[in-house]
Amino acid sequence: MSITEKILNGIKQAITEGGKVNIDLREASAITGSGSGVGGNVVFDEAFAALRQANPLRQGSRQIAVAGSDAQFVAKTGNAANSTNPWGYTFTPDSGSPNVNTSIWQLPVRVLVAQLPIRTAVLSDVNGLDATLVEDLALEFAQLEGQSMVLNSDQAGSTTTSTGATNGLRGLDSYTSGASSAFGTSGTAITNGIHTIATVSNGGTTVTYNKVVNMANALPPQYWSLDSTAWHISPAMIQTLRQLKDTAGLPLFLELGEKDGCAIGHIFGWPVIPNPYLSTDFPIYLANWNRFLTIGDTEQMTVQMFEQTQAGFVTMYAEKRMVSTVRDPFAGVRMSAA
Image 1 (tube, rainbow, N blue to C red):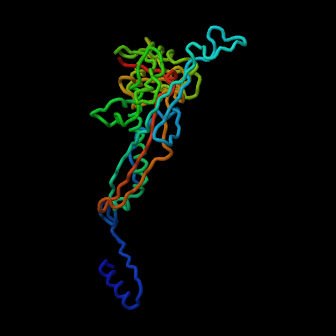
Image 2: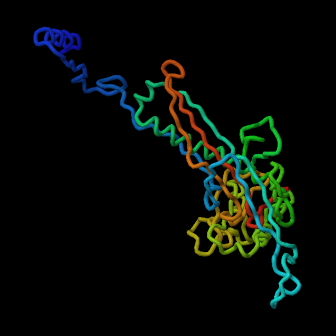
Image 3: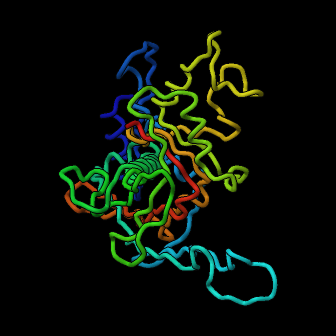
């Protein structure tokens, strides 16, 4: 029966019987051929998005909830015991070397936002599109926060604001390099708390095995056996390390007990985490991440749909608020390319 015949028969039935009549216009085709538009409709598979690289810095780092607009960090520095003669019953307060003190720094919570217009017809037609958009947006935010946590300088504006500039996070690369670690200046100004991170220079040459050894030795031994101690290495540097071979052509960094061909799963017993957000300036970090880096998030990420911002569209708005800082500069070291 043709579609026209179905409609006419439905009208006749409604007139003679009264009430509501459902007219089924679905095609019942006897066509056995194949091809686009032959014998059926377009069927949408579940929507998906290509997998993005999440933020590796969240692996092992200390993560806290921040409810306010700013976060202040306090570190005890110096010694309380009499460094000349701490034994016995003599009470000599604040006589350490250096004397006991506290260092504070305060950082504002930063806001990351996105707006995405979507045709309402597409949302209803494509299976699982709304869930896919939310999942992919969360990973997109993870990419953006990872880039800002490494590359951004919060001290000056920039013509390139993709990592935030003065509205972004305090990136790892913006901390001062030095032969040894030290806390930054104490206070609540945005210029305070820029710590010095112990940095091993690669001297502008290709990395060598001994340079990696020197970097491992630069991390104080009290952090060596802690659970979250790990390397973060850029993929390009991992490739370079894999190409380091001895005189017999064997890889220098193939750990005993590693699976065949793994090469750079661990270095000196510490796991290696590939981090594509590390720069060419500082391609390797070694740290006890739970003490080295603190990430503060507001308690929830906002995702909201605004209807009819323009005819036929809804707009998905997403907002995330966070802050990050090097908390214990002694808990991490890095390698510089220069």
